[in-house]
Image (cartoon, rainbow, N blue to C red; front, top):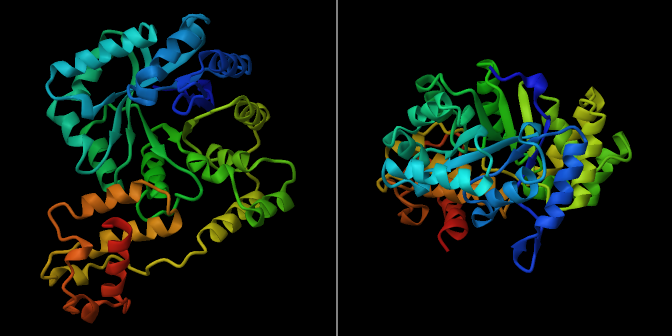
Length: 372
């Protein structure tokens, strides 16, 4: 059983490391690592694919060679897209051991479980049992997975695999009610089952660290002197059951700001939570499609278009036009179904829509976003 009290609340994500001349700058990363460790923190997260594999090498060069192995924890991940036969599991794992020089992994994850994608591969090659065997061998201390799927898939996987010790999910105050990511529902499922959570994207790839002045003013009026990133991190860290929050720190300034946030951590007060809710509202000022997913529209569609799922993807893009996840969601929604551009404008869907949506026009919006 993982002791949440012994875990570093702030984890060092090695996904967005500083570079020099197109290569990871090991010297700068070493300095950042030293500052992080000196603050009494010790959780480092990498993956087989980060920086083309060089992120795992950075573990060896900046951490393993320079600090006692027992002074830090390393987490890395098995990528489904590199698995084409059962033997590939060992090939990838041995490569990771060689790259990192870690000897063993404190936390090992199946990378990015999602609907219709990687999860079937992990089942096909019996990766859950394979990871448990690695744990019995002492090469893995704790086993879990990172997740980018639906709440329904999460419950299915947890029901099938009670051996899972922790789950890593994307969670931040903007994605809490996002129609595609559904962070709030994922959090509630895990919290109700008492499964420890590792949180990725707490500042949504930097989006919540770089707010417009009107949103920054809300936070500054409530509690002056805190960075936008600190508000996002404190929102997540205030949630019960959160084990570690990953921050992909790219420079020394980000390390310093994060250490300031967690050095004397204070959960959000009620007043501060209200400020976060106000900023959520400002960021969601764009009107969304009022689809309730009743699915009346889909039963008689001659082109078998999954209209509610397409509208989820459109809503997510309205909230964050630079996001990539909604494009994946659209791809899954149209696999085995019609695309938005296949609509023949028969009007059947609009005739039964209880929300009286202009579905035909909204599908044209989806075409512009996802098909051009």
